Image 1 (cartoon, rainbow over the protein chains, first blue to last red):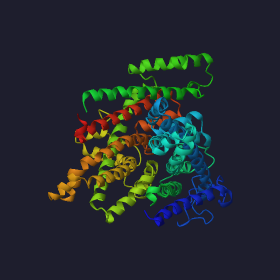
Image 2 (cartoon, rainbow over the protein chains, first blue to last red):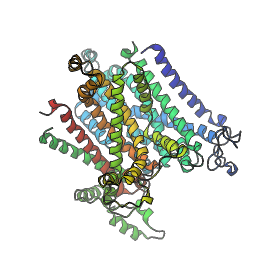
Image 3 (cartoon, rainbow over the protein chains, first blue to last red):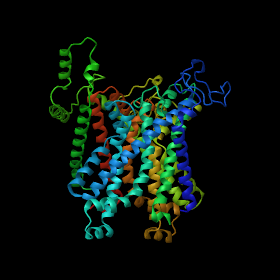
Image 4 (cartoon, each protein chain N blue to C red):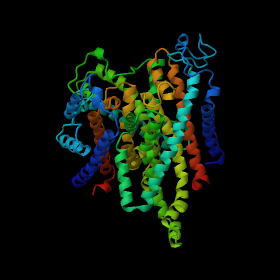
Amino acid sequence: MTGARLNWRIAVGGGALLALAVIAILAPVLAPVDPLEQDLFLELLPPWWQADADPTRALGADSLGRDVLSRLIHAARPALTVAVVAGVLTMLLGTALGLLAGYMGGMVDVLISRLVDIWTSFPPVLLAIMLVALIGTGLHSVIIAIVLIDWTRFCRVVRSETLAQTQMEYIDAAVIGGLKRGVILFREVLPNVLPLVIVLLTLEMSIAIIVEAILSFVGLSVSSDSPTWGGMIAEGRQVIHQAWWVMAFPMGLILIAVLALNLLGDGLKTALDPVLRR
Amino acid sequence: MSGHLLLRRLVQAVPTLFGVSVVVFVLVRVVPGNPIAMMLPPGATLEDMERLRQAYGLDGSIVEQYVIWLGQALQGSFGTSISLRQDVLELVLGRLPATLELAVFATAMAIAVGVLAATTGVLFRGRWPETVIDAVNGFTLAVPDFIWALALILVFGVLLPVLPISGRVDPRLGTEFATGFYLTEALVSARFTVVGDLLAHMIMPAIALALPLAAIITRVLKNSLAEAMVQDYVMIARVKGFSRWRIIWVEALRNASIPALTLTGVQFTFLVGGTVLVEKIFSYPGIGNMAIDAVINRDLPLIQGLILSFAVIFIVVNLLVDLSYGWLNPRLRS
């Protein structure tokens, strides 16, 4: 793969994400109106390109007459918060357990691997809904649910990569050199597993955005007052025959975020892998 | 695979099932919240509550509860649903056929699309059809079933209203079914109007479930086909003058399909998991749809029954995948 194509992926994916992050951070400044303000005269107002649109409501209004554009902008906040926090925490937990299983071997490995098997025999979406229904709704619960479910994704990959790394000669050299096991694990093995972990992190962030959307779609994320993309989709689903755009816009944004993260992941995979880089 | 190996596989499934049941049981109970309180009418006394707790086996320690539940489960009794007041096993078995038909239909579709795309890509290696397939596949890999389902509803249910967006069969047809396997039954009894209606209801949820799986099959199968195409036996087939189509479909595909099959087994779990949400979006009356309602109603016995049936499905699928290796690769038959 050529350098130019590689940069293209990272630039487009990373650029789109940066734009979303800026939108989320500056939401109160960027949103033209209050996302919670209801105006029943504007109920199911069409977006700008259709007849009888209102220029102050560029993307139309939902069934309670709330401005779709402002809600979309504000909903970027919970989505990106979950993506970053849940993504990083999942990575930390899964990577730690994966390193441990792959490097320690023996009983530790058997125990962790068995746990992964049991964990992955649950349908993930159902498990997420169950966890949130049990812990209670809210952003914290969504994050906890994602971490508790998806650590296996990191654990599996990191474990097998750690196993592969420990077979290599540089580890033998480190052992002969008299380094302690913990030092070898963190200074020798971890840096070699890290590129893989970073690529997985971008994928995990896209999964987190989807899970947050799913949970808010089912009505189990943040309270129904504050806007979320999933919640907007659920509301749009109710009025789909009268106003399809209420559902289409948040879907489009989720799609953009997910594709951007995947593109970034693909770009990083080639950029971080010395074999593919050549 | 010999009978001995099959038996060993079945025995191996026992600890996994046991683990799943323990995890579900503990998870559902450690967290505060009182489903019994929600069932009682206002003004009920503490004694009423205690009686109800006993009736549903919710008194006693968690270990006691588990032992009682396990004993009953082994006899085929999974308790009574708290929200629907019906036998859990009956409820699950009543809904299971709908989910199975959907999942099998979607998997068949995913395999058909995946094999077609992969073989076409290899046949036109380095030319524009391969580029198109790779580009479409990259996009399909990234988009989850949730978004596909909603996009399909938007396009084929609303903007071009050609397909029904909810349910399993049009009630206006007034069809009576003897089993829960509507599609199979309608096909067998040659009621083609009903078959058409069932398929019209099933096609969108099936596509939503099938696309992510099809994308994965395409990628893995295309890679292993490309590897198989440089093997000696393919060279011999070429020397013999067989056409490229014949070489790919008859000679290479069987050998190249093993890695794709392993992955299909693993990914099928995600497909079945995906039915939970896709069924909800299309109001399709399967166990996935029921599961979301059970969770929201905190219906403990029903949640346990449903999750265990998901676990059983996963184990059976993995068993089937293991068995088909022997068919595809004679060296594993031993």
